[in-house]
Length: 89
Image 1 (cartoon, rainbow, N blue to C red):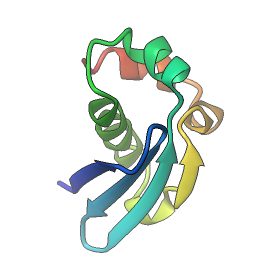
Image 2 (tube, one colour; image 1 turned 180 degrees about the vertical axis):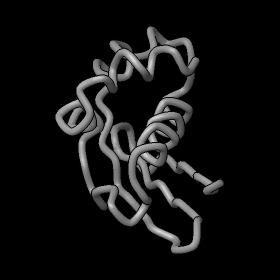
Image 3 (cartoon, helix red, strand yellow; image 1 turned 30 degrees about the vertical axis):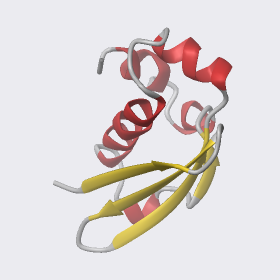
Image 4 (cartoon, one colour; image 1 turned 60 degrees about the vertical axis):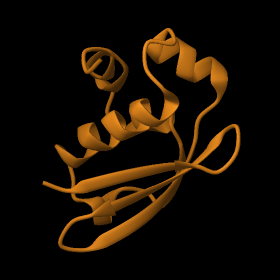
């Protein structure tokens, strides 16, 4: 199982390090409105991003995950994302 570390860089930017057989680093943008749409404030933004990476790692290796992306892009690649992520908290 990969280890996921999420660090807030500013209000909308997070750095995610995924340690697996290969360690990768990703920059993720998350607006406050999208955060509230997905979580209704039930969990922290860091938890949302961590759960998103768990979701992604179930579908692809960490080396296949974009190195920089806005969180809503996840739904472009995986249409079930928004519904699935809500069930994780």
